[in-house]
Amino acid sequence: MKRKIKRDMQVAETIADVRRIRAGFDQSVGLVPTMGALHAGHLALVKAACADNDAVIATIFVNPTQFGPNEDLSNYPRDLQRDLDSLEAAGVDLVFTPTPDVMYPTDHVTAVEVREITDGQEGAHRPGHFRGVATVVAKLFNITQPTTAYFGQKDAQQVVVIRRMVRDLDFPLDIAVCPTVREADGLALSSRNRYLNAEERAAAPVIYRALQAAGERYEAGERDPAALRDLIQAMIDAEALATADYISVADPVSMAELQEATNHPMLLSLTVRVGPARLLDNSLLPLSLNTRTGLDDTLGNPHARHL
Ligand code: AMP
Picture 1 (cartoon, rainbow, N blue to C red):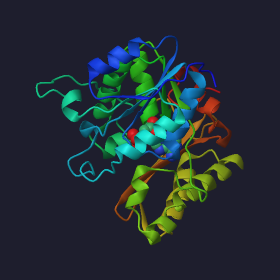
Picture 2: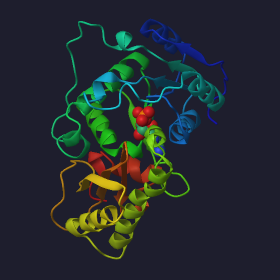
Picture 3: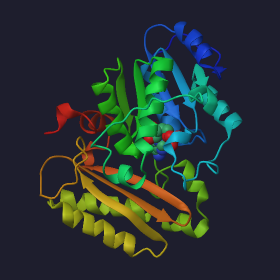
């Protein structure tokens, strides 16, 4: 544990309060942005931030601009008191819990657009999603002024987008990436897993099994992206309750869909509908890259594309 001072956790709802409290933190400040309904995946980011930094800020904000018109904004799970208790127990110093009007004054007209790397995968299926994400994350960076911000591998394209935004717009901070935290049967933890009934929950681990099967095929020498995509598709198709929205084998920096066999790292990602839930998961290949160091070096990192 790096931190020497243990402060009582503070909760702020206004930008002015965050700036005032932030000004009292010296040296390194870690930021963990979340939409709340916290689970062990979020808390792994908080734990990493607490281990690395002198002070830690978490944010809880269900950002309306990253939800499409037919998505689950109004049903998105919210449990503020429980979240605050978990963050306090984990050692967070400050939690920012703005309302939408604090983040978006009615006359706001500015947004951040990250082009090209948002054209495929989630970007293609959720028009405007990454514009909402990039804009809110840019605002959170400006409000909280972290030295390092922590994001989960679970939302891999989001990591690629944020890293490129940080580079292109010269934000003075580092991005750290933490591996996906999973249930014992491999299902990636997600606030949306609570939409699943018992039968759907039992079907959902097919997503992880398919990623692992493709990973094993890769380790056995397969380098053809189409063969890996087909293997995943066949496994999802074999599960009656699961339907793939897309299955992608992409370059982990440009997010371009791969057509040719390559020995460079690949990002497998997919979104699968199981009942009312749209579940997202991914894996880097080779599988040995699915660690904090592997992710830091590879995912969205233009300096390490030819490992
Ligand atoms: P969300 O509240 O869904 O916006 O997620 C907040 C942060 O937690 C994002 O950086 C996510 O990628 C990360 N996250 C969500 N689920 C997981 C998980 N299962 N393992 C690791 N990180 C996660």
